[in-house]
Image (cartoon, rainbow, N blue to C red):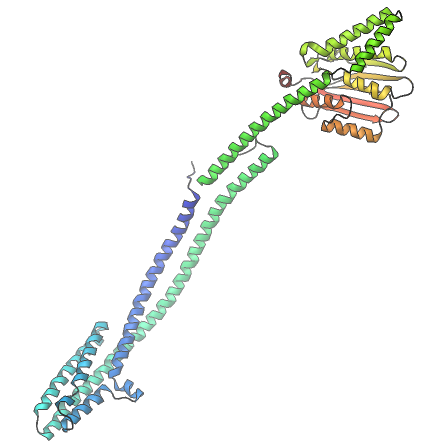
Amino acid sequence: MKQKQEKLETKMKWMLLSTMIPMTILIIVLLVFFWHYTNEYNQLSNNLAVSSEYNANYRNSNNDMSFKDEVDMDIYYVTIGRKGKDGLPTEQVDKAISTVESLKKTTSKKESLRSLKYLTNYLENLKKRMNQLLEIKNYQERQEFVANNTEILTTLFEKEMQNYIYQEATELVQIESQLAGNVRLTIITMCAAILVATAILLRRSFRLTYSITKPISEILHNIKKVGKGEYKTINVVSADSVEIQELDAGTRKMAGRIEGLLENVRKEQEVQHMTELQLIQAQVNPHFLYNTLDTIVWLVEGGMQQDAVDMITSLSVFFRTSLSKGKDIIPLSEEKRHTLSYLEIQQSRYRDIMEFEINIPPELDEVMVPKLTLQPLAENALYHGIKNKRGKGKILIEGFNLGDDMMLRVTDNGQGMTPERLYEVQEAIRTGERAGFGLAAVSERIVLYYGPGYGLKISSTEGEGTVMEVYMAKKINLDNNSR
């Protein structure tokens, strides 16, 4: 099943929104309930504060007269004639009526509304009775009227106000209890919601982080492989985000291009290097040619015509095998003949100090080998081994069948090398430096044709001689020769 891919930005937005939106809705709902109860609490508190101004129990605590005391006193002064009509507490009663009407707007409890209705009736009747009081002229009748009407109404007003306050206070206590419970519920719910949201957010964050870090780690691992040159082992990274998929595709594409470029560079370097080695190997030492021609002239002048003919024949074979019709890969038999002609020429010059022997099994004659593999080793054995030794020395060339591989060995019992010089030559062969006559070139060509594990090995003991071994496969990689 194909994995659904999304952009990282979209995934992160969805993760946050899917967590925060439910939590925000829950918070809004809780805040609405909290605001509702808070509003009711404020209204009840305001009702109690307003209504307490008309209650003697609350007013006396502030050493001030209550509504009842003030109204009764003003009516009394009017009754005894101390004040006229303008002395009636009409303004206070109107204000009380307005206050009661305002309380009705903020009161919701049924019993409290009933009390406010009674309070309105009491105040309206009080207002009427005050107007009726002015129509009574007799002092005694006024006193009786006040006692039986206005004072009773103010008393009823005060008691009903106390009842209203009680009802509102009771309601306020309930609201306080509900509000406290809701506050606790809100806190608990908020904490639970935060914990749940945090857990969900953490879980999704971990999953998102893992979905990012895991493929990126795999991509990093692939990049490390590219750095090590392991282009074939790069695996496709599975990810559910577009950016990482594009990064992986770009990395693998980059690795492919790098591999192709490096392969092209490697092939070009091999071609260039092989050309350089072939040129080096193809160079004929001019001193060898001059000395050979001088030797031929000396033989002719000395009347040794047959020896001169033999040397000319050997020189002809030497140059013919050197050219090899432009081929760089020749049968081992030709390479053996080329080396033999070289040693025969040199033996004519150094017959007093050099002898040689070639023992290569016939079954190896048709094995194809790079041209100029043995001759440089024989030349090195002569000039750096035999010539530096006092007395006569010998060069032994052998071949060994190793199954799919073979080994050619050139041994001389010449001067040999000091450990320091041997180390220099071995390092030169390993690094490709030209520290020995033809040795590095021979080894490099063998490695280029046959690959790692093949090449030239050299060992030597000072005063005893040197052994050079060339390891090759019987089947050569002709792709290099085709170039």
